[in-house]
Length: 212
Image (cartoon, rainbow, N blue to C red):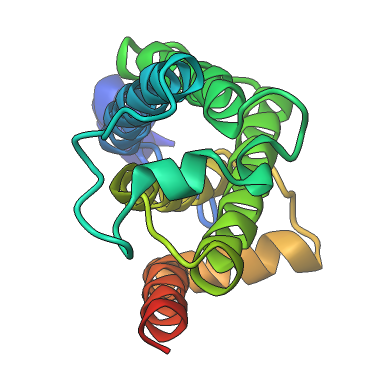
């Protein structure tokens, strides 16, 4: 007791407990979510303008219509670009706005609840799954590539990676098998390899589909 009393209170307060989650607020990862979300809003915003342009003037040549392979018009006029009813770009703009708002809150120091973090993570992973399906359709069904789509996919990959780290920091998956699995991946940096690998695989699929 005598020894403990001589330890400054400030030092005892910051001493980490064994097995405790990281104490960093993760603002760097929140900044990644914010920047990528804003980039996604910009990319989808451009697509919305282009969609309106070619809807009103079908003969218009868009600035991203470089050739028969890199052609935004071919992609935006395909049925896959409105598979959910409204244009995919409009749905994507809403989702990116939601993700960016979460990133802004995190950068400003707001502490997100576990349920909110899991919701953002689930939204990002679903978004990435949908974007991956669309890129497959682009390469093997539409036969053309919209350059803005590559930016969108990259932004979603970065957001998914950042939210994986943020969910780990707050232990949203608990101590069960899923939580331990994510923790193991994060500590070994395997999660970053998975997300980077996802992007590389998509890039390879697109290249294979468009060059075949």
